Amino acid sequence: MASISLDTVGKRYGDLQAVNSVDANIKDGEFICIVGPSGCGKTTTLRIIAGLEEVSDGDVMFGDYNVTNDPPKKRNVGMVFQNLALYPHMTVRENMDFGLKINNVSQSERTERINDAAKMLDIEGLLDRNPGELSGGQQQRVAIGRTIVLNPEVFLLDEPLASLDAKLRVEIREELQELHRQVGVTTVYVTHDQEQAMTMSDRVIVMKDGKIQQFAPPKELYNSPNNEFVAHFIGTPSMNFFDCEVVEENGDALVDLDFTKLKLGASTSNRNLVSKKTLRIGIRPEHINLQTADDQSFKSSIKFIEPTGKDKIVHLTIDGSEFKAIVPGDMNVDASQTVRTSISSNKVHIFDPDTGKCIH
Image 1: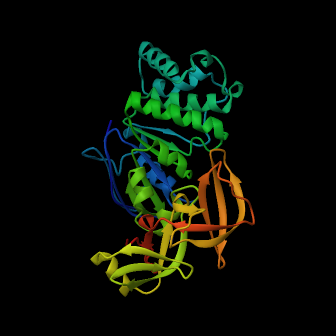
Image 2: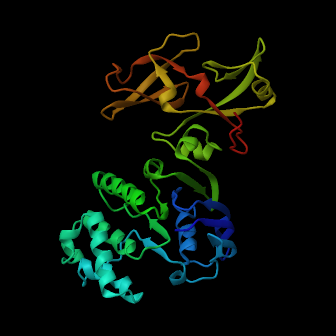
């Protein structure tokens, strides 16, 4: 196993800066996810770690060793691609054996590694079948097994669950977590699905336009986003945003949303916000409260409701602004209804509209 350090890593394709001054220190044995929208540079970053892409700037370290100029075969990485790349004319056993043969591993050790991996992944009964005879989930397990038998120091996965149905994605996700607990290999997992990242990772790298926006544990990303992009990207449904001003009344700082005012308190940092001009606040849907009657509540209209089973996602509107609330599934609310609504003021995030940075 090995730690991974990216030191101001950059990658250019002509005029396109695909990865821009990326710094990240991944601990030995950590499970890290890289998330972000399409084209943000997450797969390019993974391929740089693997040695499949040469860097334009910066260095890549495995432990104390600089691997920046090393080819993939010298880095001892295992990689699972989205398309799996199994050899269709070979059996499962032969697919898993192929890399071991190339590395001149003895027959007895090859057999032992394959059997151990097959047992771990519950594919012992599939070893003599061809990939075409397997389901998508079984093929995924084979692709993972083919990598695990190589005993890599670093395990890299590029959107490995993208082609699977929702139920199977959850099953394989759980198996990957259990596999990581058993094997303990430093793992970097690329996905566009922030739910996967939040449930699987020790820490998450959020990328946009080739840059890291935040690198933190899932709970920190959710509760303390660095900027408006992270706040919007992390969380389902996404955070609500409103333009506002901060005003002072009786020594307290208040967020003025036109339709209501939220008290922030009398701390020095809160009062300093008053000097700012227009700001943006973010509030997560679970912190929008319906059927309330406190002095900060306001009337909003329900546009439509999405039942999800345990909860309901309620789409609301007020003065042309649309926002969402999450309420218990048994709450009695109907479309076109007007409801008293309030915002949990202690859960408000305030962002600078020019830089997007979180300032409260």
